[in-house]
Image: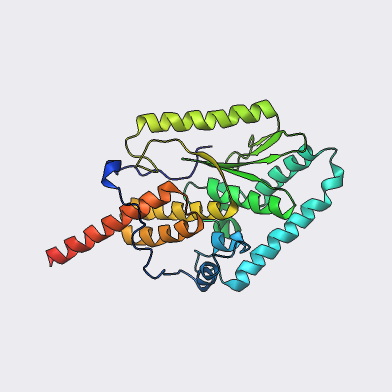
Length: 283
């Protein structure tokens, strides 16, 4: 059940070194990994742009035709789920069916570091991609899923007509569906307790610039930004600061209010410039 918003394990520095208020390098031309990604970000100012594009477009194997295939597959699957609705006595039981059927069909192999497209390639997922899949399907079914971001994890809830919450924990295939309101509150409290515990014992965090906890509701577009954020963290752990920087710029466009995305843009930009300077001095 450990979240997959990845932790940097070997970066130790102080937040007061990063005081710039402006995002560096955002005036640079964005470099895209696929034509689909270029098309998506050209329309990023359009709030109606399908967030599924941003979840898929980083993978250069995904073109417009493949995007439409995945979009249509999810829509048709949602329609198939909808036909089952009348078999269930209440909404909670129908949502339970959705949770486990999605796991059976798509979410078969948990991997800590994984892209959304691999759900459809290899049935592999992590907390970001699994939560994104549930959010897309529930939206297609007419629900308004509440996506919750913490520093190390993502999960979603659905609010029933009586005000109760249903919790979907994508990384827990056996017990990740929680429909008892008190147990939902307990599960959420445990996430925040685990986060506080991690923050208290780590000097370098997934956002190493402060020790504030994160617990906020985000949109599916902002979830797609965290998908890019995860990809950037992989690059940072490989000390590939240039690739991390350009991926984070895309994350910032989708989620401009994220402080940790802002901080990492500043950090990777400075590290990349430092590496360039060292290269020139060595030669």
